Amino acid sequence: MPLATAFPATLMTKDGVRIDAAHTPSRGHEDLGVVLAHGFTGSWREKTTRRIAHVLSGYGGVLAFDFRGHGRSGGRSTVGDAEVLDMDAAVAHARSIGYSRVVSVGFSMGAAVAVRHAALHRGTDAVVAVSGPARWYYRGTRPMRQVHWAIERTSGRLVARVAKRTRISNGQWDPVPLPPYEAAAKISPTPLLVVHGDADAFFPLEHAHQLFDNAREPKELWIERGFGHAESAATPQLIHRIGAWAAAVPASGAQPRRAPAAG
Image 1 (cartoon, rainbow, N blue to C red):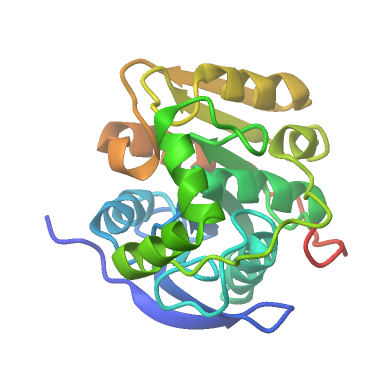
Image 2 (image 1 turned 180 degrees about the vertical axis):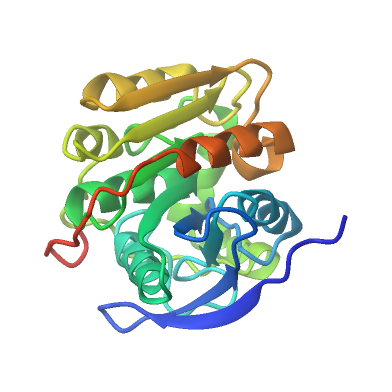
């Protein structure tokens, strides 16, 4: 089956970063917009993300975008900090093109950003965090030690830029941004769905439990047997379930609120 047509768009963040995005019109609920946020070094243009957008478009329109420093977007990645402004621009665009309900669906780094955005900026009717970290600086698995090498070393940032088209800021966080598990405690009454696999090689299940345990109702936790990490491991069946969950979320009348620029 051919993928649904995605119409490119260019967004602008409040701090002046150009964001490459695409809108896949709804094949399901016309009032639902899903903002799709990829993981670190990902892109909406990758086949895995396009397939996820295609499945989700059966439940609502999909606004997928590249975070700053990724793909054709401008700026440099801050690995989850200023990216909340990218998410805010995408949510605002989804509202502007007519979606009365907006649900953010983030994978890995995108999950952390979706949760933090809901705490700091509001504006979404629900949040889905897939394979997300609960806290910063986690180095307990080999893949995450490799990620930190790419972020913290000059040679690592060069490899990320050449191999993954990801341009990473060489500055350190100052101050350290609100961690996802603390942000999860602040998003109620916005519904939160935490999805995590028991075969995740990046973040063990303790991250999912920390996010879920710190969140207030309404919340749900799905522990998926055999599911690995983020977009590349997500099956169509899992994405269909996420889409159905998002489609069942009622409109909350969510309104954006002002927050510090980088949260």
